[in-house]
Length: 60
Image (cartoon, rainbow, N blue to C red; front, side, top):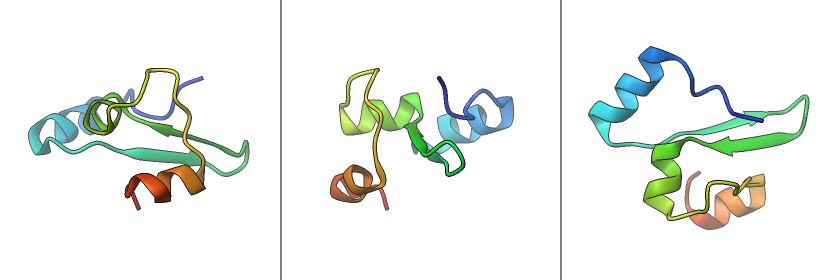
């Protein structure tokens, strides 16, 4: 399962700013970090943050 990070525009903005992103699917109760955020936070590729761990990481 992937977050909504496939959009070309999103990828280009993330690349230009050097920022990562966090996405939440409230309906399915899952959240995701994009590849740039995973690199910045040094998380493994299969890491699936919860809102609590995201707050603990300082993403919010």
